[in-house]
Length: 138
Image (tube, rainbow, N blue to C red):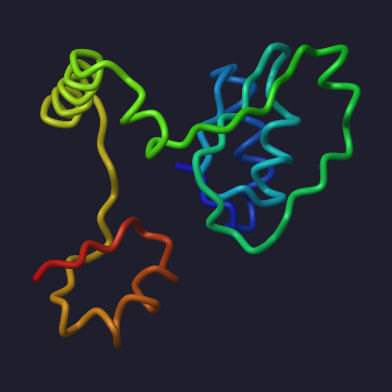
C-alpha cells in the first residue's frame, strides 16, 4: 500500500511502478503527488481522473511525455456515463463490480463506521488517519 504522506512514499512508489509497470492510473484526488506518480509511469500510461478531492492543482512539468511517451490524461464522470449507457451495459458493469467485491478480488479500506450523530465530531479526525473510507450510517 502506498500512502502519499509517508516519508518513504517517493521511494516506495518508484519501486512499485518499476515492479508492476501499471498502464492506468485511476485518480479521485488530482494533486501534485498524483501528477508525479503519472510521470513516473511507463510509456503509454493513461491517467483517468474521476474526482478532484484535493485543493492543490497539479503542475504538469513534463509535457514531452505526452508527445514522446504517448501518455494521456482523461476525465470520467460516472454521473454522465450512467444515463448515457444502455441499461444492459449498466447492469453488466454493476454486476461485475459487485462480483469482484463479493469475491474479494476488489476491496476497499474502511477506517470507521460512524452514526449520523457521531459524524460531525469524528469524521475529520478519522479521515485524517489515512486508514480508509469513513462510512456514515443512519
